[in-house]
Length: 236
Image 1 (cartoon, helix red, strand yellow):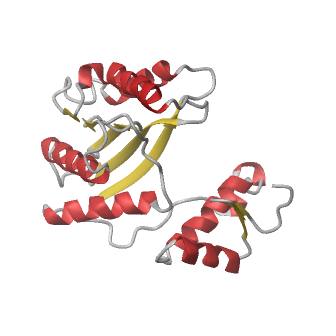
Image 2: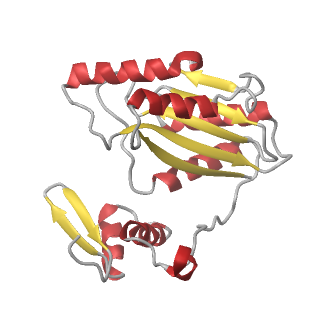
Image 3: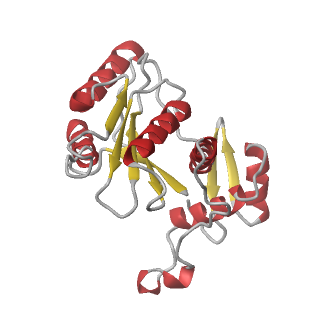
């Protein structure tokens, strides 16, 4: 049984881009968690100097495209892939993580896969550079990316004879469980609504937006962009 989550990685307040990349790679490559680095594999980069290679690719991207990095830009992405205790070896987990990363990025982005064995459950940390290998574009997160990566992970597990979570349930707090009895912020409220709509498997973006409107979400089209406002909110 494998579970997956995808996270965009930003610089964060008070950090430079190189510091942010160093911090995440230092954590996932921790030799105490990866059997002294034995459980680290990489694609189109050297895991020992991946931070420098990621940064260099971003400089080439700026040189080729003329586009400057913004403070809120995503610098890399992470997938966490966990396996049930006792079902898989660390080596197999790393191999499946590598296959997941290769197929999800379609071989267009450098990545590293670090398998951690310091917990009861073996788990992978997969980090890929947001900048493509040809330095002309960036990976763009998309509607339902978490579901897409989970489905791909499930497919790979089934292909290799491992179990999956048949009916994954979204784990989260109900409104009355939030700290201090406070309701969720607008962003979290929208996320919960969108997750519910995605669970109904809309065939395309138009169908998704139609479902959101049915539950009271205000959908505004501004040129090629779309903005969303949860019911009961104003001035957003």
